[in-house]
Length: 155
Image (cartoon, rainbow, N blue to C red; front, side, top):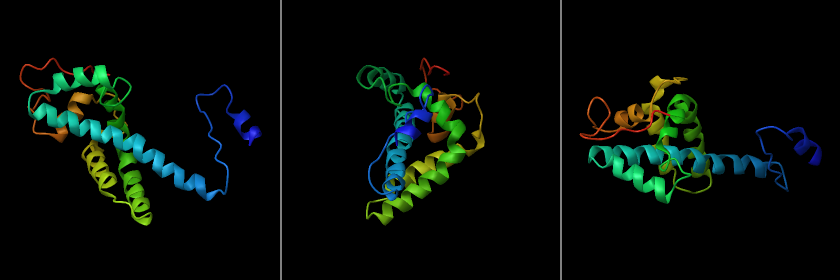
């Protein structure tokens, strides 16, 4: 294991050595991906809800103070999720299957898949903004902004 870990030294990747049979790693991957990626879909939906009620700026300010290192606390990072949505939708469907196989509700994974599916047109679109993605999820104004809203940072 140490030899494999050494291969990644000095890179942006940090290997995690999981003791035990190989199948444990196959179970850990979708569990971690579910939390990590569903959090982006959940943040986007929360922003769309807030935008629909004209309180998006307030939500962004609140989350920025209380949850600064989360997708809700830094909603400008949602733009990266939009560009990757074409990969994340099928991954969420696989995670939903893994949930069902474990006897766990697949509702969160299915909802995340639906969220990412709404952004399919932004495949590899590095120019899409968080504001555009949020507007696509809600009934916000055509510009993607609530009346009087300052707007999200573009990146």
